[in-house]
Amino acid sequence: MKKLLNTKLIVSITLSLAFLPLQCASAAEESDLDIAGTPIKDKWALLVGISKFQNSSMNLKYAAKDAADFRDFLVSKCNFAPDHIKLVTDEGATKDRILDILGDSWLPRVALPEDLVLIFISSHGSPSSMDVAGVNYLVAHDTNPDKLFTTGIPIQHLAATIKERVHSNRVLVILDACHSGGAAEASKGIRRVGNVDAAAVAQGAGSIVICSSSKSESSWEAKNKPNGVFTSALMESLKAGGSTTKLRDAFNLLKDKVQQQVVSERGVTQTPVLEATKWKGEDLILAAVPTAPRPAPKIDDEPAPPVRASSSSSEKTQSVGKASQGTIPDIAGDFAGTNGFTYHYWQKGRSCGWAMPLLGMTGSGEISADGKKMESKWWGTVSGTCGVDLEVDQDGKVVKMNCDNGTILTRVNYGK
Image (cartoon, rainbow, N blue to C red; front, side):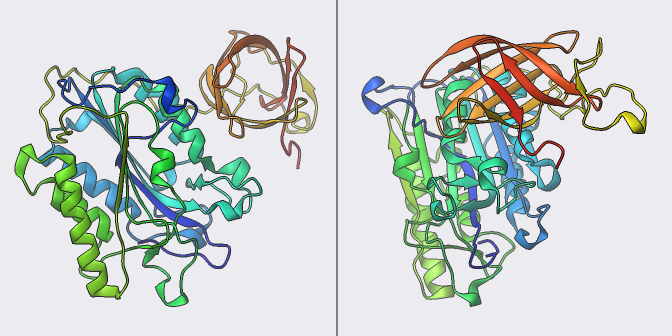
């Protein structure tokens, strides 16, 4: 469905409504949840579509439109309140913004355990062969395909973020992604290439993952309409039985529609895949009317620029010191730790979050009023807390963090 890059190939992935998995906990650690038969109190959706990238060679045709069309479908056919849907596209879909909405400013602050959360992301993805550690990444608007570790979103981290920070027991994720990792020259601009294993992703309570194709196939854009074959068939199948259409019934119809259309138009196969774990009871009805809808809280999830310390142009050099009283230092970015790990930080005001992608760990921090210190805590494979002294340059950018547990974090590529 998406534009192929070249032999370096960034794979296109559309993560539509799907239950995102958690790979941190084993299946044996959690009991099956009979949540599908319980009422859905409220419904929320995050829809991400990226057709325009900072690296214009990665630009796609219909990713942003797929997300916008799906938003309209959820409102008109599936009883989602318009203010319960967050649509993020193109320049607004940076790595930091996506992670912030998922793990900090929005979903963790609106969804409750008996709500339904839908996540749709349409973008590129990277095959594991592009990373030295074999990690699959989602590509944000500002991702550099040559520096996936520092600028991409690891699939495993995305799953862990949802598991640890989104409070809903129903998180539905649909991945419109193929897994072949390559494509013929003639398919440029019309084919999505990915490397997502639905079975590996569908782990954890109340998890359902739908992928648009099997591992050995590609996903395609339609020839007769400006959408992906999968996204178009998804909407048609979800409304086929009216407001009582069950998810598995819709998937079976979707699978037939996609296979028939792609074989007819391309002469190749595309076979959607559904994986579900820890799911008992009645099937999910996406259009179910929420039984206890709540007003959407007023939450400003737009990233706020940091307040800079005033200085002359001659002072804006490599000089480093403590933050001035009342300023909010800029901590967003990547830091290398003396423990050998890389930390990715994102920020909203004095609150920030961070992740260690290789360990699947996430954490949060709160910067003090004077901008000189931060209290940090983390969870995942291990949990803990520590105090942090911040070293800030004259532009207000954090360049080093001295943790009271002995770890020192230094900003990656500072001054280059």
